[in-house]
Image 1 (cartoon, rainbow, N blue to C red):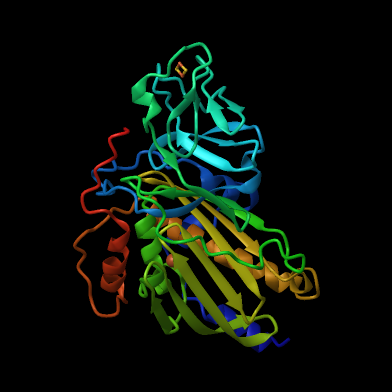
Image 2 (image 1 turned 120 degrees about the vertical axis):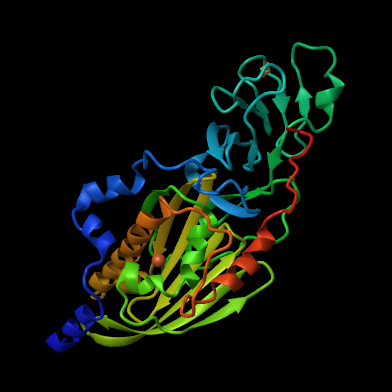
Length: 368
Ligand code: FES
Ligand SMILES: [Fe+2]
């Protein structure tokens, strides 16, 4: 380890920028609280032009342990009140919360009956696939309007330690599968280390950050932006970034591989300093509210060995970058026709690609 190298690592950062001054006052619990505190006094969704609906895709909404067999819980995502339950068959199901009978919220006091959800008010029982009423214990006949699809249900799956929910504004079926990471749950890799934020902005603005080349200097203080090799797939996109990273043990060749599958699944693999997989859960609650969780997993040999300090430092640095971006995202508006200059990076390409996740004329299904 040489001092010169430590110096080089420090010098790679420009002088503190405005958001750093704001964040530098926050330490320990204050920082953790700031990350999830409500940002009040923000402009309306309409004023910020965030009223463009939610992009369709699979979203990691909760961790697997959120709902056990026989349990019902309320949830709110995509601007909707929802009820989630796990049937006796172990499957997670999600339904719009409000009962078609007299409007009770089934997430509060609802029960699991076999694989059905039972409304707490008069025990109407819904299935989680067809969105129909299967049983009304006190009635001789089920009204025909609820014998057919009368409410919205959402496809679910479980992978990578998360419950995934498929959201499509028109209720269309999943168009791709969730990508499974072998590292998660592998005994040679650590359990997730969690970090959590509420971001008061849109998921599209957040996603654009990765291709917004110029902000790295002004928000993150990166001296040069290393060239990225971009990958554009059918539903996913990604980038490989090769960078020299300054560490206490010298400059190392680092590689950052970023990938997405749809708007709701993204992960980053870091190699060089310390092998790290970041699995992101970014789930829209409202058009201007995102729940963000980062789960980090690392090979135990690195995270628990003599390199533990480096492994931790890498996680800290990634979280710090999100803190810095959050200051912008919390107040950012969506500029549909941005004025772009050279040096801005492939923002127009990103926008063109991302537009595939929106439905041109999202007409919510008749089941509303
Ligand atoms: S309101 Fe749900 S059963 Fe009556
Ligand atoms: Fe950023």
